Image 1 (cartoon, rainbow, N blue to C red):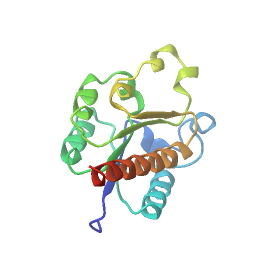
Image 2: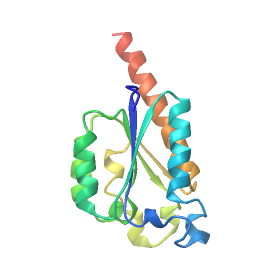
Image 3: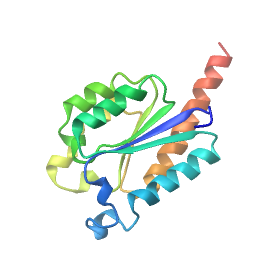
Length: 156
C-alpha cells in the first residue's frame, strides 16, 4: 500500500470460479483478470486496491469489519449471499464510505429468488449485467463520489 486512499472490492461465494463456472453466463474473465482490471483503474484514479474473495459468509463479514472505517469505498459482489445474508447487510450498514453493488449478470432477468438483494438498501448504486466491466464502472463511480465528498468538505 502507498498511503493513498483505498477502495475495497469484496467478492462472495463461487466468484473464485470465474472463467470456469458457466462462462456463457458469467464470461471468460477469471477473478485474477477482474482484480487486475480493478487495480489498473484504481491506480489510474489515484487509489490503492484491497481485493478480497471468500466462499464463507463469516469471512466476508470479518473483511467488512476490518476495513469499514478506513476504506474510501466498497465494491460488493456478494454472489448468492446478496439474496440471503441479512448478516452481511448488517455489517455493510456500518460502513461510512459509499458502497456500489455489482453483479456480472442481470439478476433481474434471472430466477425470481435473485430479484431481492440485502445489499441494495445500503448501496449508493447497483450495476448489473455488464460483466467484468461492471467492476470498472463501480470504481469510477466511487472515485467520483469521493471527489464530490472532498469538494463538499472543502467548501464548508
